[in-house]
Amino acid sequence: MGQVQNMSPAKARQASRSAPAPPVLLEYIETSNILPAPEKLPGAIEGDPGDYWQDDHDIEFLRSEYPAFRNYLGNLDLERDAVQVLTRCRGLKAVRRVLRAIAQWDRGDLVGRELPQGELADLISVGTGPDGKFKVTYSPLLAALEGIEIFRIRECARPTCRKIFWAGRADQKGCSESCAKALRNQRYRETGYPEKYKSRRIQREEAKDDRRQTLERSEIERKKLRELRAPNNARRSPRLPGQ
Image 1 (tube, rainbow, N blue to C red):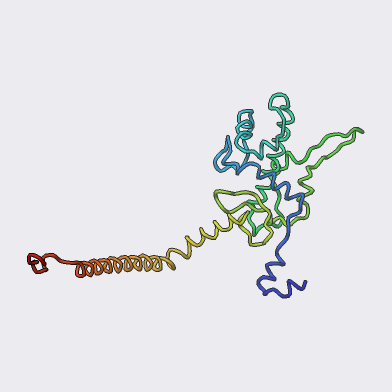
Image 2: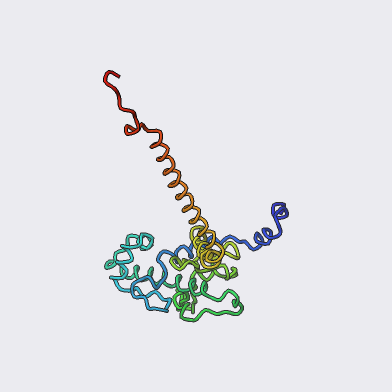
C-alpha cells in the first residue's frame, strides 16, 4: 500500500486498474496463439473469423510451417492417430474461436453479452455416465473464464500481429512491448508528425544544405590560399648563369 500511496495520482489510478492474468487462462491464451489469425491460414474466408483448415494437407502444412503447432500435436501420426489428431485440432479451434470472439467484443458494451451457441459447440458435451445417468461435461476453458474481467481478453491492435492477449493494464492495446512501440509510432505518424514535425524536418534539411555550402566555400578559399602560397615559376626573375 505504501508504494501506491507514494505514486502520483495518475500512476496510482493506473496501478489500481492493473491485474495479472490467471495462470490457467494464460495457458489457454498462449494455446490460441499457436497459429496466427484465422484469415492468414489455409481455407480462410474473407470476413469470417473461423478456422477452416481441416484436411490432412492443411494440417501437414501447418505442422511444417509453425513449430508451436507441431509441438502441440506431438508425435501423433496423421494416419495412425487420425482420431487423436482430429480431437486435438478441434480443441484448438474451439479455444481460438471462443477467445477471439470475446476479444473482438465492443469494449464499451460487455454487459449481458452472450456467446453464440456455435462458439460453445466444442466446449460442452452431453451424454450418459458409467451409471447410465445424464451427464454434462464442460471444457476446463469455461471454468478458467468464469468470473474474470472479460474486457482484459483482447486482440492485439497491431494489424500484422492480432494475437490474443491478456491486458494487464486497462489501457493496453498491444500484446507485447514491440507491438506497443509499433502502435505508438503509427499514432505518431498519423497525428503528430505530418503537421508538427514537417517544418522541423525541412529546417534540418536546410541546415544540412547550409553546412554543405559552407564547407564548399571553405574548400574554395583554402584552394586559393594554397595557390597563392605555392611557388610560381612564371613570376620568378630569370637566373643568370652561375647563380
